[in-house]
Length: 289
Image 1: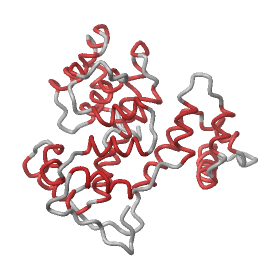
Image 2 (image 1 turned 90 degrees about the vertical axis):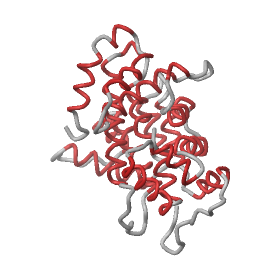
Image 3 (image 1 turned 180 degrees about the vertical axis):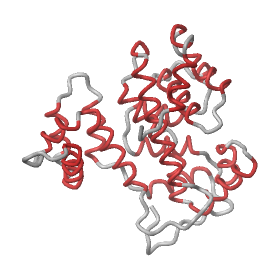
Image 4 (image 1 turned 30 degrees about the vertical axis):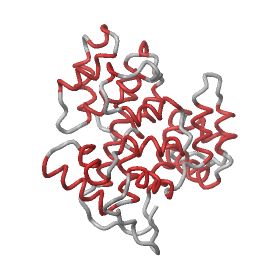
């Protein structure tokens, strides 16, 4: 990412989409412990010991988790001093969420104070977390979908990662994208292609491939703006794509009921019949509730 001693990249007027996407390789990779955690917790036979062994390789992350576990524990007579006890205190699902959220944030954290711009980073991350939590709740509410709630959370968190990646590498150009989108109330992907020559779904796919994310997450990041009923049969995570689309729509400030109904068309009829009540619940809910 741009550093304090190096000015942000300026987008050449004749830059090709391939050149723009290649610049994303200057961003940090997801730490090995986070990638390994995704692999370990994606298995049905994973245990707390497997998670602990994975996290021990990241000392700074271990320290942050111990601090969080002790805060959550209140006033224990003996402080939590091992990663194993921290996992027991917080729970495996919470640990997974905390680790991935912290490490993804770290990848795009600016070491210099960001200048005020049209792209609202704080608002972006709040929306990402809200979609993650809504997707998790939707998956929990209908187990028959076959989507693990923890997988739904990560997919929701990362679905728009291409936006913050482009904003990190080309901050001035992406501010123009955000300003034009706000002014015209248009589709941000259209403005990304107009100004940058590519969009956040392709940028997100490149980041996901570089981070070696699981196939299902790569598909959500790449395909979440496409109609699910038109996706190729080679797409393996159609239901997860639809779930994240629905969560994204429900969490948007101007959520469209028509689009939400379209997004839910891939879901089982018995669930679609009462999706409105679930939608209302997700709209009312906030990550800090």
